[in-house]
Length: 572
Ligand code: ADA
Image (tube, rainbow, N blue to C red):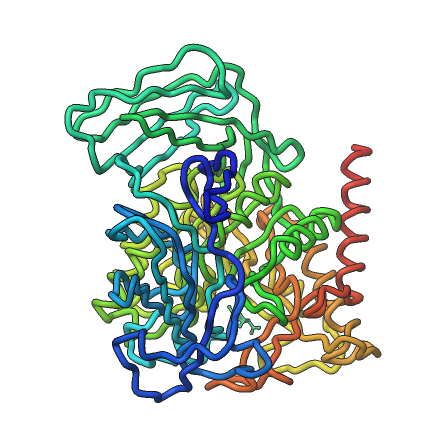
């Protein structure tokens, strides 16, 4: 994470970081244009008749509850000259206007954007952001109707404004090579006023004399020694600092010395076999949508760690800088993936969809590369990877991730299981499977033997010669439990607890499985129904916590199981 420096207040009482950036969070003027309203190109014609919070989701405001259309946000800002707006994430798409002139379009939800523009004369100006959440059903669309998570409309994550840096870091990677020894490779790509620059200066942990990183046309790559290396791990999430100074600009980065490896069918962290036990977590809340307040994120992660879990899968879109920094600090391991859900042939073979997937997956990796908590890259959750037509895009996404960062394993959540023909392209095999929930049998009570048998069959399949070198994960598994429904039958809290306990016990005892991400951390908003399934009340009730994070029986059952398991291990 590139850490900010101190705040200072300008004459207009606005907060400016001494590096000059302004966090635009707060209340903005707002108006809503229902779906189908003809869109004028001139934001000056909008009648702003209410206020809205930024970050925030307008379709959770009572007056626009679950409506589709365009939410238009406006505020005055003081600025001038070359400026940059950093939008951390909105949805489903947005347009930025400065003094009524369009300066940018954001066509991907949850995607971080740096928008450079000429703000004109120093003074007060008008910034308008028009955010649309209408469905685009074309094959090239990244967020399609029917994804099993809600397509909220809003500015999900913060927007900051800063004077445009004369030198920009398009790529800035600190890749641990031999973490224990403190050996790292720093790779940078600077743009802007780089002409004549021969080197940058590197300092670690504010210690010692600056080290030289040679540059050619703003590009440099070199191996360095971190003075007093301290490994990062979930039990000791130690973060190092690096400062890279070039042409008067200073980039401060936090990073961690840790190594993730795939060997003999197992995952290793810092040379020790790793067992991942955690949850899929949507970065969502019933009151705030995807504009989750920092406090909720912190509580969620602390709760997860306290329950003895060590990881989250950030399903099914890039995670916020804030959440990943929290995971770095709390020592929670992360599977981060780019946006995708159940994509079919029409999309997987659509050139525009393919290009957007590669662009957004690459962007995610470059944005998150220095977060030690991120140990796995993913993409295209449950795409139709049983078909040949899926292979080219899966291949280029895996190659893109390996090119950006050769040190993290790549995988994807496959629900095609033993029929999947793209498993050769991944470093880790990850199955989304729902024995005891989806499928013909529809047991009234949890058939634990059947679940163990199913998991054993998948492990056997993944132990074939062509797969046995790859670690194996259950990337999704679970059952619906309506909060407060008891008795042990389907939909009850006990049914879910029996199923998840069976799974976690099996994975803990298994020599083949490297872990599981249970579906899911908490109940989340989705659709009443989509093409294939109905969701009671518009919520996915497979959470181990209800939507307000109240624990179901399964949460306690799994926490107790993990505590006992830890005690047993501590006694060994
Ligand atoms: C899938 C999907 C999840 C969710 C889950 C479910 O595996 O990846 O997003 O939809 O099923 O609840 O059915």
